[in-house]
Image (cartoon, rainbow, N blue to C red):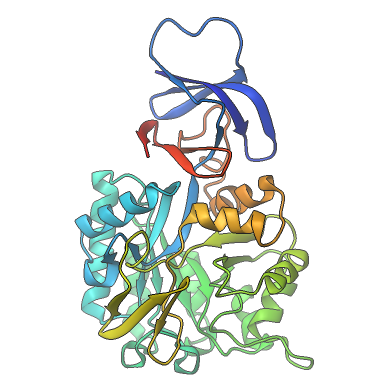
Length: 381
């Protein structure tokens, strides 16, 4: 048993002063006033007056700490990515595979399943970003690895989803009618991205169960006067979720505010889209054989194409406050409760209340990460 004391607590809704939190067997057992003697049994952890918040959840992270999932589709690669991002407050993530050859995809799926069975801290599932993407909106994805699904693909994906939580980003215009319904019926979260789809195609996809839009504004058809495109359809739809890369590069702050004002509360979530350069001093590398450069907060190919980011979730939270002027409570929700709801896990994570998993982050006054817990297991940073 652990008792965390001398903390402020963001419970998922409000910030409460002078709190005390109990943890046992990986779950939160109590949240109350920090008064009276501490329990005689168990470990006591003084939070130093810091802010205890639900751990951050990143549903789109390609790599970090020098490791790109495509280059290391194995349990140890997943472990290193998760350990890297844990230092920045991410206690749950969906490692994300950029469009690749079928053999690499299968290795990544097998590795993610093995990581879950082995209890690798922080790994919640796998995000397959592609390969059913539109070459016209490919971004950094190699066009020679993009394709349309063959008849066996849906069945294979449905089989994998039986014991592996999956997110799939696809272009709705690049899959046959009914394909999305087949995936969502198997429990796969389907998100639209790297797409030139029009409003009619997207509405059909939403009717089939599409529930997300990957890195809003980027690699998708724009909002225009006579065609809403992907951006307009995403903003107009009440129920779907949008991922936002808030690094000050992928999305202008004013555009981000448009999205937040258009979508109803709790439908815009922070993501990093981080690649292997994140949390390193690396300035140059390659991504699927293509040279990339990191400079002034941007990760790009030689032609200027954005190649993911070097963002971490704690910086995304700070940017939500500093660049957008959002209340801290909203920034923290966008990093925890909103992605938890997108995943259907908001009854387990994303809040600090009894019965919830003890996935937590302790922040100082500058919103820097000082300590994390995953399943009650803590680590200083």
